[in-house]
Image (cartoon, rainbow, N blue to C red; front, side):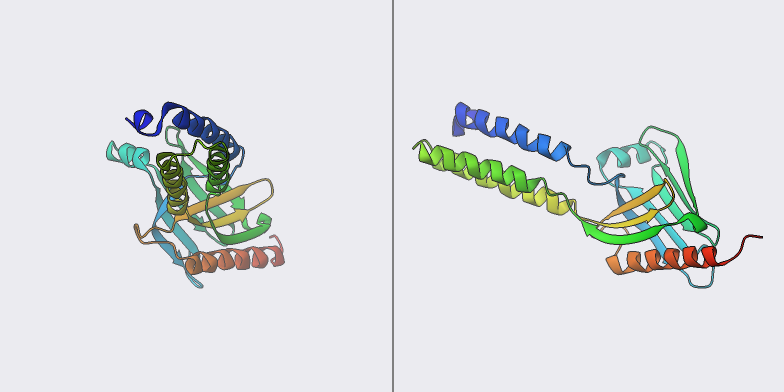
Length: 211
């Protein structure tokens, strides 16, 4: 129906240039893990673990696997001696990433969001200008372009995350929490507190001589 409403040539051009935009997207590695829904984030200055984070993977496939009994949750614990990250792929077995506290080189907390809507919108604007210059632009084509650009921005906005990153020697842990009001939520301030606590433990570990 869309092909007849806008015109086959218009839709074909949009799809072709949209595919080019997607190649630009696939060439940008944004995050190393799945988007997460936080269930529990606790930071303690006296008790152990000093940082305790539990979350579940977001998206229809993880939810379906969880419904069938597949454990797709992730857990991070920070103790005096190490940061332990337990996770699983969608179809793989559960794995542990262990970073000794003395080997933690950096911790970071920041907000992130995909940027692929920028080249996608640029491609659409180029196409609209090209068609307008040739006198072939219709209001249907302009509307379709505007809707696609708006939808691209909306999808990227929904994928905005607050990220907690812990780096060690040759190892990296990244937890990307959705900013949508799902689960317990993961405010940036709470993740910054967790990052600061892990950095504090790492500093103390390097100051303490080995037994």
